[in-house]
Image 1 (tube, rainbow, N blue to C red):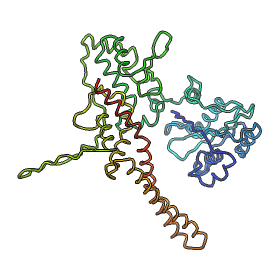
Image 2 (spheres, rainbow, N blue to C red):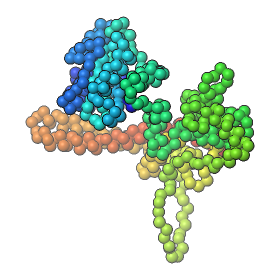
Image 3 (spheres, rainbow, N blue to C red):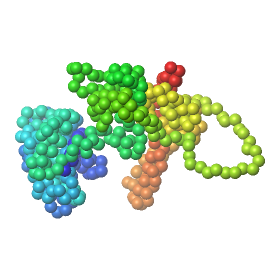
Image 4 (cartoon, rainbow, N blue to C red):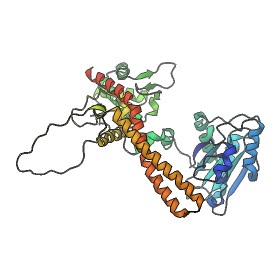
Length: 447
């Protein structure tokens, strides 16, 4: 079962030698990617290497000369790095390398210089393919587009790889298995950690609309009432919807089982006939910063009651915002009230972090936030100047180990200060958007 992914190499060739001196920082530079694929340490003394349309020993020079010949040395995209991985125990090194070379010859043909190597340092054998972004035939740039990756049967990166694997009797990733690879990484990570994703929100809105609808026409009307744009008709191949907070259309058939147009019609008919009862919709998981596990205590005598202090300034704004997202346990807003804020739910953790920071630092006004930012900047400047002086001491013969240790400690102090300063800048930039979101949410509640 071959899994493939493609990485763009952006670094400039004239800086490649300098970047090659620091492997951690240059894994995406063209010259270093070539060095990495041919790294003997990665291949346990045996490395399967093949140069396609170039000499394996001077592949980097051939690619650079091609760019110079066609006047494209300064282009941003210098090359591409494809990784083709196989399931543990499924292939031998020889077979993995044969699949990799056949894959590159079929994908790139006689147009681009490429290097194919097979690494044996992992339980799963994997090929690394580095190829030039400029064709040596006509100087055209390789265009990395979604269709070039997904393609179809026997077309594109994944399609070509799958076709070759099948011809060699190897398994391929089925569409269901590949679903993670077709979604954005942030969305996949959110789902893995139990957080709501944009598709979760859309599916819940569809379920809510089904509860209110009796026919497909009223279903589409209910979706539009919730702010959705519906794209369907005789000339539309795939029915799609776009939420009010979204930037692009989402095909219904990409939402999973039960959400294609045909399946929605069947669900609606089953609900209408009474075959399927209306289910209570689960609330999307949002962790509240106001509820923490605790213990019960028996207290003798009366407990003095204190009037809670009213929040003001920025903290009051954030509290209203969290309330509209449903994070405050008391007096939750109606389910329909804040559907325009659905996109903001995906940013809940960030909003919670900002609110707790403002509370901890007792920041309520723009002036206080600016003062905190300036104080952090002053600390960073002082530490940076001190670290710069330590770099100078290294050239004067002082104990290098002691100086390195001190520099490392200063760097460790700078990191959280810079993160805190970035948090202040983020709060400042988000205030106007948050005020607008609170306004929209409150208007929705009044309707």
